[in-house]
Image (cartoon, rainbow, N blue to C red; front, top):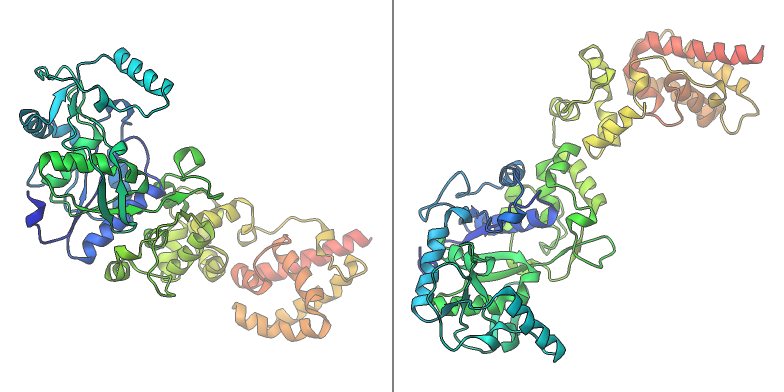
Length: 489
């Protein structure tokens, strides 16, 4: 396919199957996807698996699962070949051989005649003379026959200064020192990245290449291969790096970059992750921060991709997730927080009614499901399923001389509650707050909350009472008064 005749935008995400995807790679996929969809174009998932020694089993399936979770649908991928055939490079070797032979026949590629030891001697001599090592300085005067047993190298068609336009970085340039006789086909018959991606982008009609800015330094080498093949390069779009917290280097797996699917396990919504990643190195030029995927498609503009590196702001991600969770119905929110294999009595059918009452409180206190599960594990919601066990001293309000001061207040709360039957948090608050304000809110509400939950930190007492019901509320207040009396006697 000749991409010069292609009228639609075509982008691709082309990872190597060497392990899990993390945020940096997925952000590149997202930008490529958004740009294609913004222009009603085509998005391709290509697998660049020519380095078999680094390949990790299951990586392709992981890549597909990651894109599927985020809703980044591709038109062509490992399971959907295109008119050019497979998108998996190891299944395209005949194509690379065909283009390599074209260059060889034109005298623009030659078999490497040197052993690794001989190359090391050349490299050492260059180092001793304090000059860069360039293989083209040792290009043989005559070329042997290429039979596939030796690497095939490019004969740089012209040693010159290249100038090119990058959609993010603007005009870039590099001199002859950046050009060399790079390997096109390795001795094992597999192409190098330098060669294969150029052939694939041409064959697949790719119009825009989104990739990390670390490839800028290699672009002159790529351009020399385009020249040798007589091809017009696509538009280059250099992604700003995703940086570590200290901004000293690019975030990588060794720096603790998470598997993107770990965010799914934690309970981040795919809509929130897409929203967050879009704002990592791209600015819409407005104050808007909350976007649906369709809204991003509608406004995404590659000219607004930033040059500077972007740090992953976990607090921003948590905030966005909470905003997207707000759009869930109570029923869907219940399904969300109970998803997974966590075992806790509150998540059982027996306590479903209590959990339903707690949904507004959980929504308020929770940015992501993992926070709720952590709170469950810490016992913060145990009050909903069992009477609390606590030391009487916990009932002491900081302004009281001793814990005995709490007893008459708890007795009065019991008296107010006993005849009351409108048992929801708002009605209970309206009933008790006038008394609490007349005595002192902390003096009443602190021991009340501890008596009901047994904890220093818990939801407000009105929510707890609505959750556990009238009978359990009165029983826990009676138990607290008995504790105080027992300690006093």
